[in-house]
Each structure stands twice: as structure tokens, then as C-alpha cells.
Amino acid sequence: MALAADYNLGPNTFPRGWFIVAESKELDDGPLAVRFFGEDLALYRGESGKPVLLDAYCAHMGTHLTASESAMIVKNGEQIEGDSIRCPYHGWRYGPDGQVNDIPYFDGPCPKSAAIRSYPVVDNMGCIMAWYDPDGREPDYQPPMLSQWDDPQWVQWELDHLGELAIHPQEILDNMADARHLGPTHGAPCEYFANEFKDHVYIQRQGGPMQLYQTYLQTTTWYTGPGLLLSKQVFAGNEIYELIANTPIEDGLVKAWHAILYKGQSNPASAEDKAAAREAQAGALEAFGADFNVWQNKRPALRIMQLKTDGPFRLGRKWYSQFYAKPEDMSDIQAEVNGEHLTQGLKTPEEVNHNIDGDLRFTA
Ligand code: FES
Ligand SMILES: [Fe+2]
Image 1 (cartoon, helix red, strand yellow):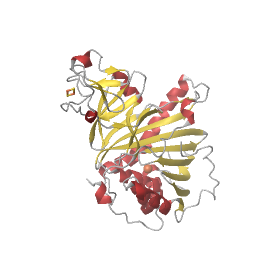
Image 2 (cartoon, protein in one colour):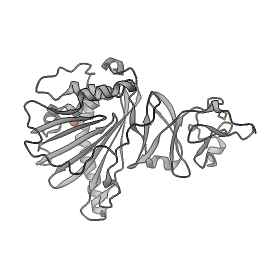
Image 3 (cartoon, protein in one colour):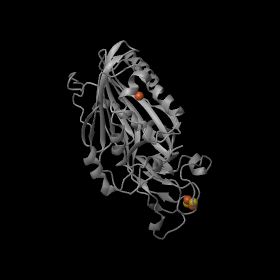
Image 4 (cartoon, protein in one colour):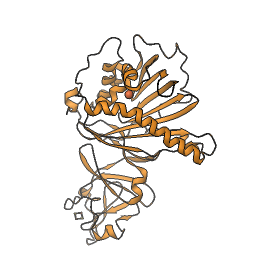
């Protein structure tokens, strides 16, 4: 297993950015114990509907806030009060800001030093997304949001939970520059291909004949930060958006999710549209599964033997390194890679009049 340092990422071990930490509906059944970024975390939804993510361990005696099923206040459904949560051991109550705001058997002021870390969290497109920054800074951009999510003609996704993958996310991000795997791996060799970097956004535009559906496939794919990929895909009169997300659990171990947002024939989307959406998601998962299968079995590519007719892997890795860099070094890295980068031997999007971007803005 290769680690961040093996790829010369750093100085941080985990990247800063917005990441999926759960599917929204998972919180309907109560608080969750999760682990990401090398930390045990407590995730719950407050009574107002607000999702809250805290470091897991109570300052009093180290109890995990959301791992107990047998404590009486958990069994009685009394753990959540407003947007606060009580520790199952002695009932200290934590607010969504991580501060202790009530101790049931103590009438003095709650100790400020009992505060635990709270992470910025949003409920966005059926996903709980958290901002992680090893340097503890507030978000410097918004997570991606598709306006189609709230359009009744579009069938909202339910996530495919792909589980844990023992690979460094660098290898997943390499896919963005990887023009030459599209034929052998996916049966959809690109005729044209280009990448573009815009600060924290990494874009890929490509298209070509697709074996599986006997059609011409065009895609505009973009990462918003290091963990959230969206891809607009147009083929045979269909339009879909694919989501692929990775969140580090430990250094060299990620959790991954996948989903498709599907435009129905009727407005609002009918039962048939919903069935077609499930089918489209299963088909897309099968295509993505070909990448997943390679990742599960490959050895780490600490160095890529990049040919001049390969895509711009090195630049892609440079872009990705901004999320592991000191905050003050990010803008230098962005300035170094920003702009459009072509791949020798392939047409440019302009040459084939790639015009599927429409109103994509790439930033929220
Ligand atoms: S350990 Fe949490 S209240 Fe005592
Ligand atoms: Fe791929």
C-alpha cells in the first residue's frame, strides 16, 4: 500500500476539501459512528434537520458519542436534543459547534476546554458532505450542486456504496488525464480529449464511439476539489450526470460512492423514468467497475512512465498536490497548472465542436 508521502504529496497526510461522509438517508435511523481522515467521528442529524459531524470522543472520559446502542438514553431515543447530542456515558451534552452546553449533574459553567472539533457539514444532493482541512481553516469554496437535483423531471439518485478500496486516491485522480485507457478499459476510445485546470477544479472534455451502446459518447467531467467528481454525459439523445466520490479513511485507504442523475421523459418523472434511471445507474456502474477492478489489482504507480501521447498525468498530479500543500502554497500550484492542456495525437474539443457544457459553471 502506498502512502501520500510515497507520491510526494504533502506536507499533509490527508487532502483538504469537501467529501462525502454518508448518504443523507443513512441518518434517518439515528446517529452514525464513522471513520475518515484517520479519525473516529460522530455523525448525526439534529432536530432542525441540520447534519452535525464531531470528533467522536467525549472530553470527560473518552466515550464514543455515537457508537453505543445499549445506553439507556440511546435506546429511549433521548440522545439528540435540538441540534445537540448527549454522551451516552454521563450525559454531557455537546452542541453542533463541539462545545459542551449542559452537564446534567453540575451547575457550574461548562468547561470550555471540553470542546471537541466540529466540521462544516452540508446536506447536498442526497449526500452528507463535510469540509476537512488539516490546517483547520474554513471552506474556501462551496461543494458542487447540480440545479437538476431539484427539477422534478430528473430522477434523484440513491448512492451505490462501493465500500473500501486499498488504494491511494492519487491513483483514482489519475483517471482524469488518462485519455488512453478509454478504449481498452471501457470500449469507448476518445476521438478528442482535453483537460483544463481552474484553481480547485479539474475538468476533462472528451468524446468518441462507444462499443456498448453503439453510439457516440461525449462527456464533460470535473472534480470540485479532491473528492467529488461529476460528469455530464450525452449519448443517443440521453443526458445523465454521474457522481463518483472518494473519501480517505486512512492514508492509502478510501471509501467510494457512485450514482447517476437521470433526466426522465415525462415531467414530473414517471415510474418508468425511475426504472430507467436505476437501469442507467447499473449500466454506468458496470462501466466504472472496469476502472475499479483495475485499481483493486494494480500496484501503486509512484512514477508514471508518461509518453508524449499520454494525457497530462504529471500536471494532474501537481494539481492534486495543492490539497496536501500548506495553505500559503496553494495559489502557486494553481498558477502553475491553470489553463487548458491537450493530448498529442487526439483532436481538440474545438475541432469537433464539443458543445455539451451548456450552463455548467463548475463552481457553486
Ligand atoms: S464520558 Fe462522556 S459524559 Fe462522561
Ligand atoms: Fe475510466
